[in-house]
Image (cartoon, rainbow, N blue to C red; front, side, top):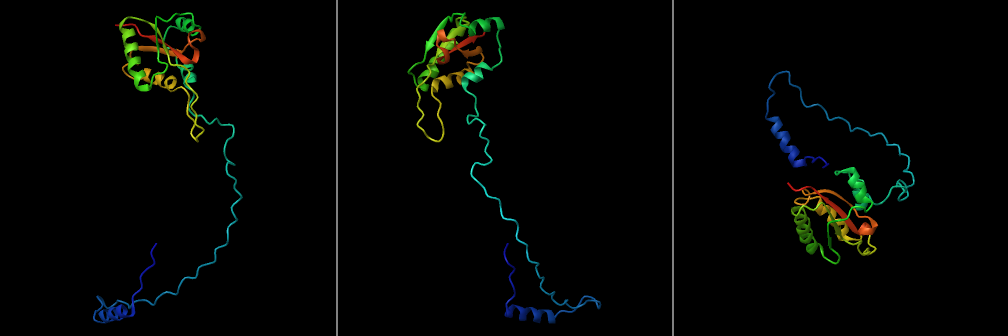
Length: 194
């Protein structure tokens, strides 16, 4: 807050001259009251000093660092949208996929159109269960402060399948059984064609 500006001696003299030329509006008008004496401030008592602080003292050491669950955990805990008996057979590897696509070694720019064409083509052909192989991915963590997940396609493919136009053709996505690729592949159960 800015401090108030006080009148200089010249400004004060000018003001007194102007004040002398005026007449009160009523006979009851009183002259300016005398200035009030300055207010004396009571001394402020010092507060208790702040307690010692150590970095990390309030951190919860038992909380996991990874706030987003893994893609496998999210898919396993997703609600079942298909027949539960068929879902159980599929998870145990008893259902044989009708077709498969292998995205190993592809970049995201190459894999996305291939996946679109494969899923939409399989749906058009009336297939129900297909296998999408992404691979488990290479460990590419560079040791920086932000951890990077391994397997770019393994994490990206389920997100692509949850978006249009693939989402309207897919009924269920779940990690494949070990004999069909385990965590490096996904079963994709397609909706019936209309």
